[in-house]
Length: 223
Picture 1 (cartoon, rainbow, N blue to C red):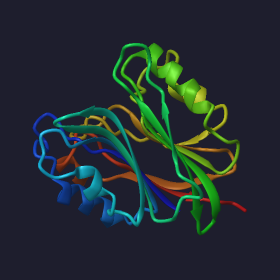
Picture 2: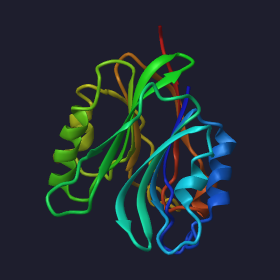
Picture 3: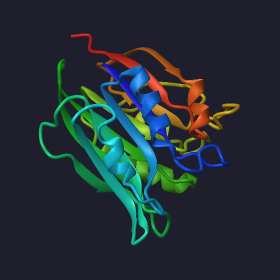
């Protein structure tokens, strides 16, 4: 199955109008089965990006809006080609007084059997991310699990990968930020030890729409 994660909100004037058609074209080009998108922002817009992105993959989606204002909302979405086994859950993984953060946990009825997918966007400080990584562990099951998103994890001290690797040791290691000259591995796909990431890559064409590159991976179920 093909998995994709992408922080889609362009800053540094890359995509100031949040070009949804361009974002959707990148997604559809790779034909993923499951996609996690971060920094979806409807603030100051007349349309609803959450609703418009919901059909970019299939008929099944859930969003987690961490910031809700009268002018619009900000958060993330999880898109799936396959149905959910039950309504996904939204967990609050916010840390103290810092920016609100959420994690989406979904059980997906894929063509390869049921699997669990956890999508998130973690914070900017070391202690914040470390606490959030432990909160994610509580959502992970030991088999058939994928955790993906923007982990903002670039420092080895109290790293997110050090926590997640205990139960999801299979992971991508691609540089995704900044998109023009990628140096940091902020965006990742983690998988439980019973899964295999057969191949993983980024898409440099996505630089036109975001300051992050997407990560796309083909995940194999050995059994």
